[in-house]
Image (cartoon, rainbow, N blue to C red; front, side, top):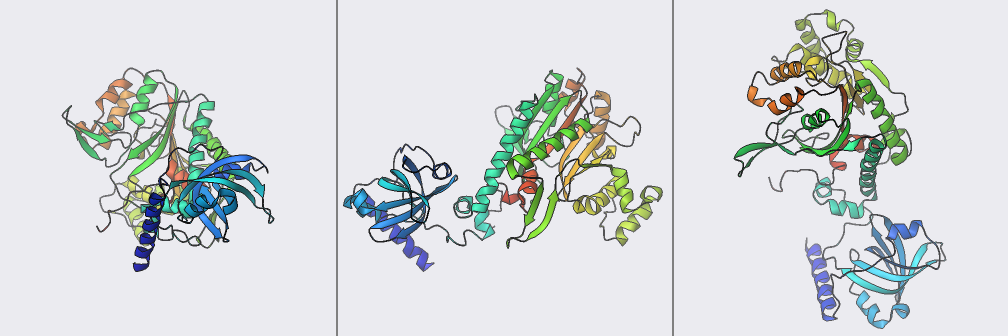
Length: 483
């Protein structure tokens, strides 16, 4: 702690020295011809350039200095000699540290060791860093600091920076993929009077002017379906959802979802659309269909193969694969089997919930490669269309990859009477929980449609090999310090 205090004091002294020399330590506008990584990737010798970045490495050779300037695009080496910049500028340079931002003007050249570089003719101080950066070789290893001070993680850990650049590319490609297929992007309210579209605990607030309680949305589904009623037949929304529930390796209270609806399609077509899209993302952003997850030591811990076509299996067949006579034995016998196999079932769980627990623990969590689980029990999905041949199931899929649900897809229920009955059953008969405006809209006629949801955070986890949702969310929610 004493050493840290001394370092801070030294940097403060250098800040004062810049002020005394008449050099603004926090800079002004600086026009550039390219960012560090861009100049390096398109390097050509002898070009005049202007660039800016953070000093992330410094090799002092007396009157000459080699620096690395870095930003999110990468790094570029610059060479500064006191004879070239002049003694006054060289004196100012002595007040700079690793972590400071500077702008440089010069000409590109290649060093004797073959390193693309910029020979500096002049430099400008843009921002003085008053705190030292994390150690160059170890970066930010403390997960508490990594998540709370993401900016330090991004500065010092190229692997983290790469994950977020890939996330940005994935979201961009999703938009492009859907727009090329005729889908248009919609925006729906984040504050809703009735939180619908999923079974989840919402965050609640109050709007003073209207005098009403409002909820942060748990899903945009019921508003997007109003758009189908309004004649928008191919729509999607990339949105934030909010659920006031637990935090874990796979859950954050604020998360990103894609929902898309395609009039006149069904869940089978939505499954094909999602398979094509995820394979496109893997190929264009990640570079191939095989995704390797590695531990901190770099060893491969598991491998996921996204090569199409993906398996499609009925829910009941997967349950029979766990216990062949599951649907032939009594409810009591099922509970006894669960207890004997280490599955904790609450005494108040309904039969379909017992079966779902078996699915989650013994099928879903053990499935690494893509699997479309189809024809799920109707009790699990109140917004999906009932199967015409088997009234106990609905026409849905649940896409499982990497041991977790990545995407559900439905043949959407568009019968307003059946929809009302399903929502009443889900709400336990509490009519105040029903979205009457949505049900009213359905009575004007919603076309049959396929719908899909994709958890973007979990998708990025799977595609990048991240093991925690906090590794793919820039600023995950955490307990306040000291609590």
